[in-house]
Length: 482
Ligand code: NAI
Image (cartoon, rainbow, N blue to C red; front, side, top):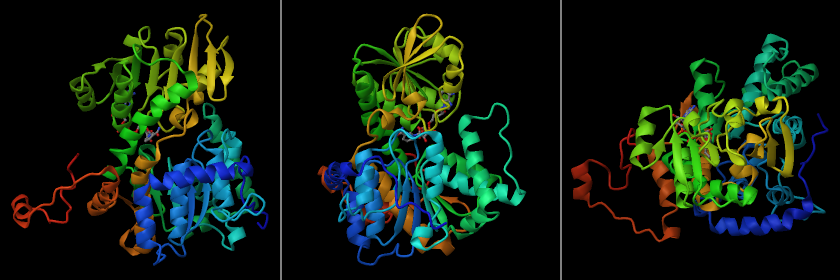
C-alpha cells in the first residue's frame, strides 16, 4: 500500500531529551561504538533492510543507529506494550540531524502503553516497506520472536487459505493476532509468503524467543536461518544476570518505594535471570527464597546460600514475589489469594503468562485499583490486597527503563555481529539455529575491558601450547559453561 505511515511515537517534542540520553549512553556502550568505527567505512550492511522488534529504549536507539551507521535501512517496533521509552522513540524518529518539525530518523512505531491491538498493528508496520520502495524487509532482529511468529503464521494461514477462529481458552492476544492476519489475508492471498521468501535470516535476543526458534526448527517449520544471540556468553551470562541485578530493584523501587531490606522475597527460577534477581534482592537486605524445577539449579541456589522451597510453602511468608522462569502458570490465582496483604507480585520473564493474570481478571469479586500506570492494587474477595506490577509483564522495563547501557552494549554488539554474519555470509548458514562463533563472543568481551580498566593477562606461546589454545583465542571448548 502507498499509505505506509512514516512513524508513530507518543510525542516528538521529547526528542531532545531522548537525544541527550542517547549521547550519554553512547559513552557507556563502547562495544557498539567500536563496531561503528570498525565497520562504518566499509558499510557491510548496505542493502540490509532490518525489521527490528525489541524494547524501544535509549540503549536500543544506540543499536539502531549503529545498524544505520553500518549501512542498513531499519524499521522498528517495541516487543512489549509497556517497554518503550517515549523520549528514546521520539529521538529515533527525529534522527540525529532532524528536528521535530522536519523528522529525519527511521520509521519507529512504538509508545509506552500500547493496547495489544496497537502492538500487533505496529508489528505489521515492520513488514510494510512500500514507503522505502520495497515489499518487505530482508532481515529480522527479534526479541521474544513476535516478528518471526507473524511471518510464519501469516504464511501458514495463506497456504491453508484461511485464518482459523480462536478456540475457547485461547488468550486475548492470540485473538488479536488472528484478527490481524485475517485482515491481511483478505487484502492479499500471498503477502506473507512473499515476505517470508525475502527474509535472509533472524537474530534473536532472548531465551524465550530462542526456545520458539528451536521448536520451529525441530518441527521442520523454520523458514530462514536464525542466530541465537541469547546464548552468546557475553549476552545471557551478562545481560540476563547483571542486567536484571540492576533493573529488577529499580523497577520495584520506582513502582512501590517499599523498603526491600528485611523483607522476604521469593524468586521463581534460578537460571540466569533468577540468579541476578536473587542476588539483587539479597544485596538490598531481603531474605531470599528460591524455587526451581531443575535439581541442578536448585542445588546451585542452595549452595549459593538461598533457601529453596515451593511457592505453596512460602505464600504466607513472602512480601515480594518475582517470576523469572519463562514458563507459564508459575503463580496461579489460588497462590495470589494465599498471599499476605499488600504482597508485591512481579514478573521479569518474557511473557505475561507466568502469573495467571487472565485468571485474576476473571476472579469474581476481585477489584482492580490503579495506583499509577503499571502499578495496580488488586483487592481480593478475601479482604486482602496484592500489588501487581506492569500487569504481569516484564516489570523491569514496564516500571523502570530496563537494563543499563553498559550491559546492553554487550548484548547489542552480539546482535550487530549476528546481523553481519547472516547478511554477509548468508550461504554459510543453511536454515537452522546457530550461535555466534566463540571468537566473536570473546571479541565482544574484549571491546568492553578498557572502559572498566581491566588488565588482561596475555598467554606466552609456551603457555598457550601447554593448555592447547591459540594465543589469540578462542580460549575455551564450546561446551565450557563459564
Ligand atoms: P533460564 O532457562 O536460564 O532460566 C529459567 C529457569 O526457570 C530454569 O532454571 C528453569 O529450570 C526454571 N523453571 C522453569 N519452570 C519453573 C517453574 N515452574 N518453577 C520454578 N522454576 C522454573 O532462562 P533465563 O535466561 O533466566 O530467562 C528467563 C526468562 O527471562 C525468559 O523468558 C527470558 O526471555 C526472560 N528474560 C528477561 C529479561 C528481562 O530484562 N526482564 C532479560 C533476559 C531474559
